Image (cartoon, rainbow, N blue to C red; front, side, top):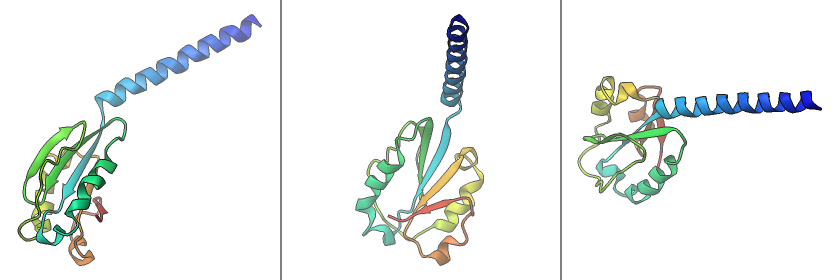
Length: 135
């Protein structure tokens, strides 16, 4: 019986140390999620649904979020998405957004999500690693 108790203690301490180490590593190396938001005229009708969609993306453990629109950067990597007040205006500029994909925060992102209602013909020219969410 003493052998079993010793084995359980050693196994419990070992697994606890591994779990604690992994937790610390994940906090220091979080998953970087870049959210791109199409703010063109065509998004005007669906823009009221976007905040709920963004809230649905949050809450993933060990994840930091950056938010960009097709016009400008909203915020760099942070623990939550803070869209503030984003209005749909001007023509769609997804080609310009794709051209900016070589710099920060794009090169730091582990995952890129584009929120857009653009037709598939416009989305085909975007990088293949981008995931498209339709509001």
